Amino acid sequence: MGERTRSFLCIEPEPALRATLKSWLDSLRGLAPRLKWVQGDAVHLTLKFLGEQPQEKLTEMRNLLPEALAAKAIRSFYLELSGVGAFPNYRLPRVLWMDLAGETDALCDLWRTVEGLATRMGFPPEPRPFRPHLTLARIKDPGDFSLALARTLTESDPPGGRWRVSCVTLMKSELRAGGPQYSPLATFPLYRV
Image (tube, rainbow, N blue to C red; front, side, top):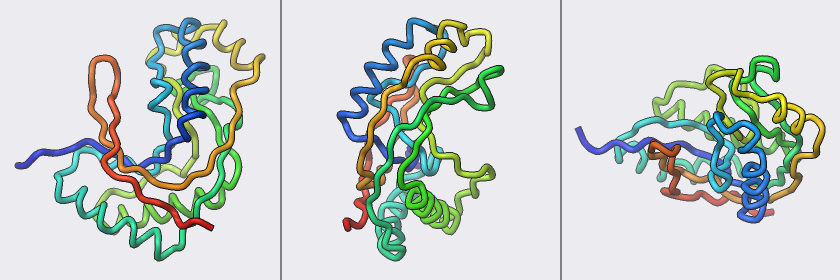
């Protein structure tokens, strides 16, 4: 069996916005140090988790995704940060996330295109409805979600920002002791209007 690469397809906020998020996340980290915080420069919106795949499957994705995006004339669009929430809720949080607003219909069109291609390629379909968000932290024990953090999130304004989504990234994910390390394998530009 050949080498396999853990990977996913995603959208990344532009660098200036990631820097803003990193600074904000760094300020929250001290309020709940036991949470598994996402590194600010690694914040992204996952479109499709591909899992551990052989190189041939990733090459097939590299070849087919541009055609799928072109066939649907998926154009670039704008998203913006829009508040913070928790899955399933703040009382028993498992994931802390940032909501997204803006041209969400265009985002859903992009997600359907990616999901449709992945399904045709043999990846299992996503069983949950698409809920666009940026994961900020994972919470193993809800008791680690401190009252100070809850108060800060509900009483202060999280960072805002708007960016043009101009490409999809095929991202490699290497699991490490300090958290996952991401590196782009390929980018796929969206149609510019």
